[in-house]
Image 1 (cartoon, rainbow, N blue to C red):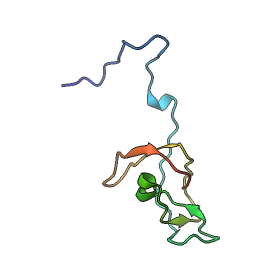
Image 2 (image 1 turned 90 degrees about the vertical axis):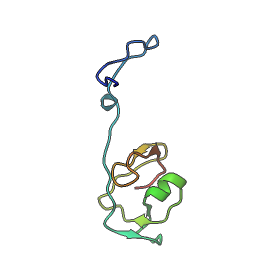
Image 3 (image 1 turned 120 degrees about the vertical axis):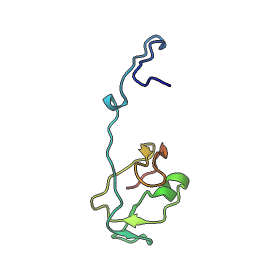
Image 4 (image 1 turned 30 degrees about the vertical axis):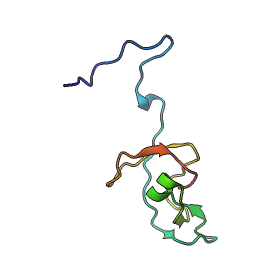
Amino acid sequence: MTNTNTQTTDLPAGWVNTKLGDFVEHEKGKKPERLSKIKTEEFCLSYVNIQAFEKGIIEEYTDGNGCVICNDGDFLMVWDGSRSGLVGKAIKGL
């Protein structure tokens, strides 16, 4: 059995042991209420669903109301559903 409460003390010189939450900001997104399969003047912002996240294929657009913005290179993690735990770098969208 692994003890998850122990801290690694054999770190390289100059490294420190710290909690991820001490230097990372997180914000939970949610599916927009309004989506469109067609990009229009009103629905002009890319919605980053699982397909967009995994393969970079944008299939839906939103008006941005109530959405969380992600930028190229942001770190995303799926928090809900069957793909929970999927992690990777974001593409620009909401």
